[in-house]
Image (cartoon, rainbow, N blue to C red; front, side, top):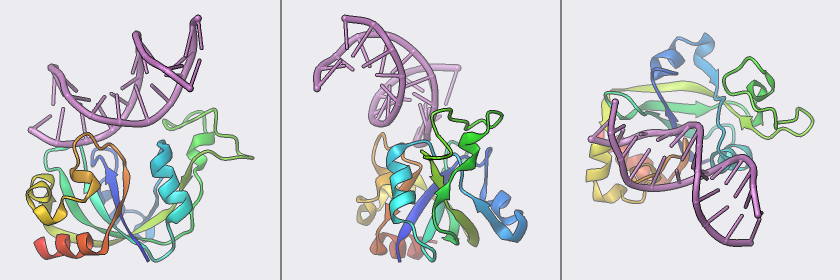
Length: 152
DNA sequence: GCCAACGTTGGC
DNA sequence: GCCAACGTTGGC
């Protein structure tokens, strides 16, 4: 049982979009970074939980939680030339990119902002507070998970 | 919109 | 295998 942080631009896919999805489930497609892919493909398991993080928007930070409801499987959007995440180098017989299904878990009553996360010395280990970190999927430790919940 | 930080590409 | 050039991310 592990914890993760899922980054998404709300203009692209927000936590509201997740809540409005059928069964409140979506497939987390479009990850095109090898380190983030490896986290998903090699370590994510059904039952893992995650923070939903809104990036590149007016209120940057953690807005809620999700849980993982599928094993990793090939990201089929990489095979679709019409998809914006199309990658001709991902071969269906040897897929390069993977995804998992996640379901809505909770909406926080407010955004726990990146600024607050950075200001909390107990969260200095969180990758998302590190300068220049662009990973869209990052692991979260148990203590980090608990501390963020205590800030809600 | 700016720009720093980072990842990827490709020439050599 | 090096590394400059380029494209992207994402905070501000």
